[in-house]
Image (cartoon, rainbow, N blue to C red; front, side, top):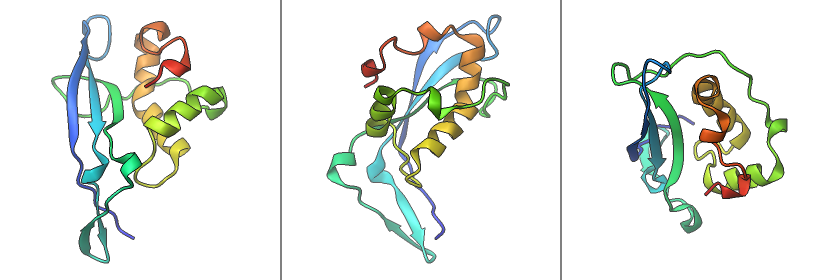
Length: 138
């Protein structure tokens, strides 16, 4: 089944940082509205209405970005390891950052980590990005 998605995304500039210190200029906070998801099934576009419990904005991502380029920054860094996540964090992510395309949350988290989090781990101290207590994740 081919899937085409129509997405409503809201972009917020989260923190401006000096480009002299980091390879990026600011953080972009993007939210997703699941009610806007549409799929092309058999060549026909049909919108899929999600369950009411999922009809809320979710965080698509918070990632480093540059004004001069819309492409992601390519950084080396530690590989994603789901075993490093404690149960409280997994539970919080399953309720607020689920994989709305394929229903495979661990693969989604890995893809987003590999695309964006490596840059943060290189350039920003851990305690300035993540809460100390995983239960603080909204």
